Image 1 (tube, rainbow, N blue to C red):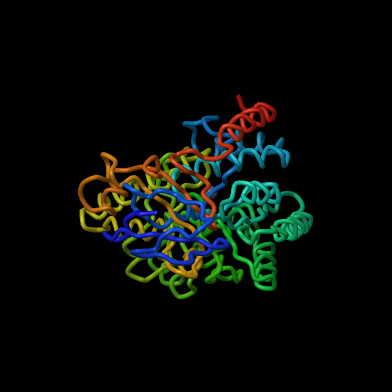
Image 2 (image 1 turned 90 degrees about the vertical axis):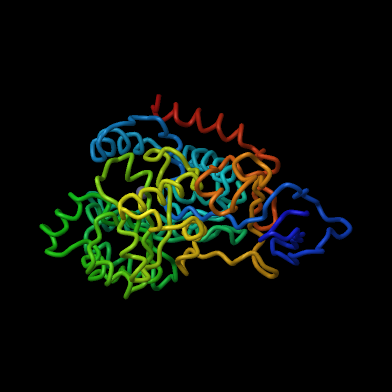
Length: 409
Ligand SMILES: [Zn+2]
């Protein structure tokens, strides 16, 4: 394909969803579908480690409100009207946007997870689709429903979709259900995603109710392990970071959603890095970001951390990209670009105004956004070529109809 990789002109051949060869001198074999990589750089795809993808349906709805008012008075009532078909098209629209902006895999938690899984299958991406759990009035029936949903998600035929549990947060899931999730997830060998320490109120309420801070409470339920993702972690203190590092859970920062919902704090990244806490980055849902362009959020992440540290060297572009590619967590990590590894990669326009001069990593983080991506390949299939995503127009039209049906203006 004649793209550049670390300064060399290379070719890459895929076979059955796997990279067969990559390097200088690799050229197409008879019968290969060929993508021209001239003027492009070959780079790994991004891993969006925290999303509620189908919330594209709520994009631009009830913006500019405080977090709990936004959730309780607007989002939760509209979500009560959601049917699987709505979630399917909302997720398809999210997938189209993620493909367009260079994400190859995402970690999702949302209602009707079987519809999320179907959408991911059809869109061609990879995802860990977590089945949500909120105790509500009847925790036992909520657990039974989550278990049923897990079975449905696990039936994904391609292997690109994996299932997990998503107890929503400590303020919506009680200790009994948390322990149940810990046991069931261990038995079934699946991961867990939970919101943790997003707001200061949440931390204060946890201390008032349980006598300990959120990470300690989660640990007592048996849920703070290497297969757990903690979304946000804004208010984690040093003792919690020590504990998380010891247990090996992954903290996923969502800088843009935190800014938009004005949580007033910042994930203590340098302190977490010092302790070698596994980490990733996510956009959070399109209702609270509102974009799924993770490349653009990488810049925000780096700038916020530099500014908060009073130090322009606090985080660099290469490190920021590693965070965005899931390379700081064994749970998130996808294999590097090499023979025998899954054929997931991007071609970015290295001859564009944003990337033509200077170092590629710095250009990607500080000058470019997701629009720089020309081609997105997952499991050897080009989901976008020359900036065109298959079925994107249909996904937008159908998602718009679905939003109207659930009463989102
Ligand atoms: Zn979230």
